[in-house]
Image 1 (cartoon, rainbow, N blue to C red):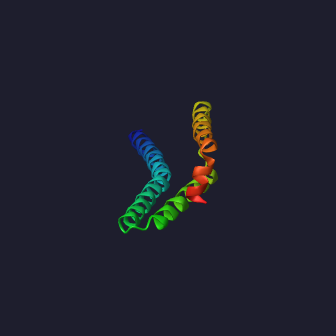
Image 2 (tube, rainbow, N blue to C red):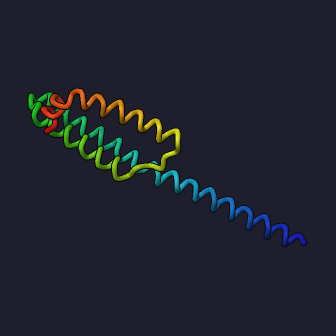
Image 3 (spheres, one colour):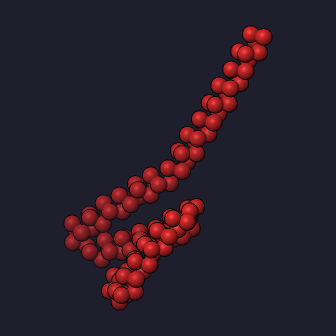
Length: 113
């Protein structure tokens, strides 16, 4: 009887530790791309500031435009799972941003095209 209780507790501990390790792994895997993107963005900004300091605004503009284009492609490719609320928030943000882009399309085209 005593061995069954000890065995049951052992199985329960193994089960709970498996769930814990799985949750940690899932969070770590989900956070890794975000951290990589933040790091890449910081490096691109450092490069742009360096070009600006060297009086090379064309290279800085090119670097930033390429960065923006790459991030847009990444975001279009890796769309997160959306709930109703987050979907509405994203739609509102896109309408606001793209509404501003439509107003200033000539200016933006001059910058990044």
